[in-house]
Every structure is written in structure tokens, then in C-alpha cells.
Image (tube, rainbow, N blue to C red; front, side, top):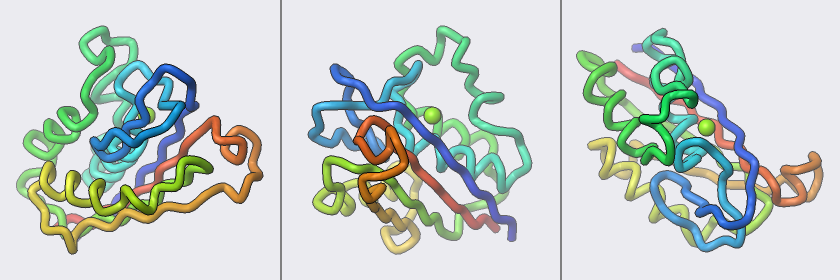
Length: 155
Ligand code: MG
């Protein structure tokens, strides 16, 4: 068995979609990014690559490469799962989102289901938790940034 952790942060700006785990969440702000900015999927990709000691998302999918402009992060995740993960497979993933607003609780199950389906996992192998920044920590507390953390166990 091997374990990996991932972390990602994106600024939130108007006129961008808020995409978390491949699910578009109703919000007046979304992630500023070269790709679709799916902070949760980016953290999961980094956790997977970390568990394999194969570098990080930036080394695999450089944001200077026009090929990844507005990239669907789910497709990047699927590429890592098909090309980098074998012969290992995922035992479980556990993730945390930190977002001041909007409240994510109504969307957690949709995010879990979408991730489980995309990753070929059972629902009970995918944990997604969410919390606010308690209104503190600068841009995070003012709702102008989002953080995701992920841990993955592979065997
Ligand atoms: Mg990112």
C-alpha cells in the first residue's frame, strides 16, 4: 500500500464557473485558472501522483501548455488513472473543501457520486467533506478563494 496527499488553492472571480469534483455549483464566482480550475480534482490528481512518487499536476499538465487551456480536469484525472496508476488501484480517497460561500452541504452527494463514477469507485470509497473558513484567513474568509485537500490510499 502507498499513501498520497494533495492540496490546491484557487482564487474565485466573477464570470467563471465554480467546478468542484466535476460538478458545477451555483455561485456568483468561480475558480480563476488556466484549466477549468476544478480545485478538488487538482488536489486528487496531486494525491494520486504523490502516492506514486510521480511528481505533480504541474509537471504532468503544465499551465504554460495551450493544450490545457480551459481543460476539463476530469479528463486529466482519467488520464492519470489510466496511464499512471496501474498496476495499483485506489482503496479510498478522503477530501476536504474549504469554501466560505456558497454552502456546499447540498452538493456533497452529487460531488461524491460524480467522482465515484468517473474514477470507477464505489460511493463508500469516496469521501468529500466541506467547511467554511469561519470568515477569517483573508481571501478565503471573504469568499474570494477555495482550497481543497485530498488523501488517497492505493494498493
Ligand atoms: Mg489547480
